[in-house]
Image 1 (cartoon, rainbow, N blue to C red):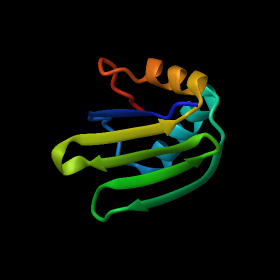
Image 2 (spheres, one colour):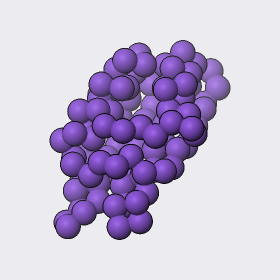
Image 3 (spheres, rainbow, N blue to C red):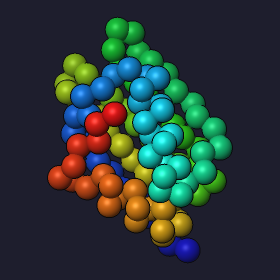
Image 4 (tube, rainbow, N blue to C red):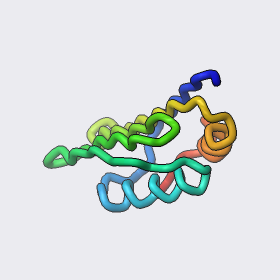
Length: 97
């Protein structure tokens, strides 16, 4: 198995932790990933960071609303779910919960 890392940055337009968590839980599951645990923090007055521990590795999201920036990172050594996720979130597509 070869480890792969996918990075995306742009602005997803969302800062609400509940919506972001639900959106990415659904997106990861739809691609075939199994979420084992989530660690997250909401920064007052704005900003959200979450790490999704996956059976297949991990996914992270960091939002910086003051800079209109969102960063996503997916690391996995399982080719099919990784390919599905990267096809859904290409550089030309803004993930918008």
